[in-house]
Length: 246
Image (cartoon, rainbow, N blue to C red; front, side, top):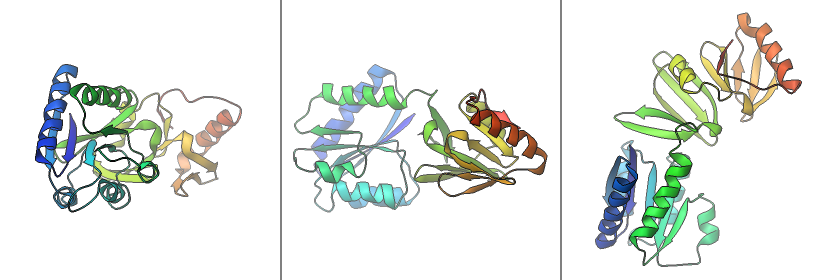
């Protein structure tokens, strides 16, 4: 299931986008939950309650806010880098401002149903491929993040902290289950509490691994020899097949 938020101060536009999305989801056989917001404050308050969305449809100019300010808040305050943002507006000239928040698409008003469907189809082609996505539960909701953006996982009893590029999240789970889900995608376990994406290792040390974001991952004493062999393997141009528990 994907969760979608629509924010526009024109209720007729909100309802129209909702209708077009619902039709597109039925056509594409996608299960979706859609929430409507007529104010930026309403959307912000909902997100403050730890509600999450996979996809936002935002009007750029609202009566009480702007889609640009909301995007900035989503990326830099909520720290949500995985959600995709689609701007829906009749105004132009915002290109440079919008670029900073990595929008997925811009839909110009007036729009038709085909435009919404095409945009949703593109979203599913890119983010609906479960081979390239890691999914996890947050409360009753399921979320997805690109596997290629994940640096590492750290377990702490029943919880797992995921650190990705410019984002982090925490959820209930186990590293064993995550390792099964990510089998063959470049992850290995240098320590019983960590699962690391080899792509984002900056350096190997005797007792730890340095990630590109500056975090250090410990290497268990019992695994140091095997990690050293893996390091040598990669330095000689080898590849990582499978998800490795050393």
